Image (cartoon, rainbow, N blue to C red; front, side, top):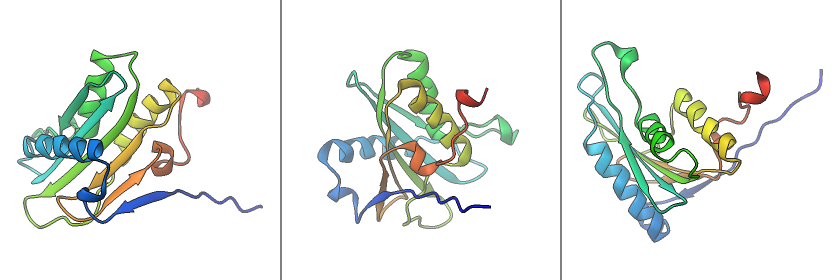
Length: 160
């Protein structure tokens, strides 16, 4: 046996106002998308906004369904739309904001495991990192320079 260590690095911003202006604007798009989420069951709204290297901004929000597995998270809604509409365009950044209708969410909320897997597929496909900015409804914002910081032991096409 030998030890194996995994290290992830993040940046923490105390508020949205500390982010670069372009990312502040992207986070505003994520918040706007979050407010349009359809979340009658969980009462947990999430919005995501992507910037593409063709200057397009794509947004998505979580969309729930009475048959729970049929719903889709905000991050996958946005990334699949980007992949369908702009299949050869690279994703540069994703901003994510989450809000509960039951209590205040002041801590950063990262993507769920399924979204991390979907995001890593696009990072591998485009062979360049995607910056991930995530927050609750207020408070700190965290940044990962790559999906690999959120999902360090990736499953990708090299395993197939």
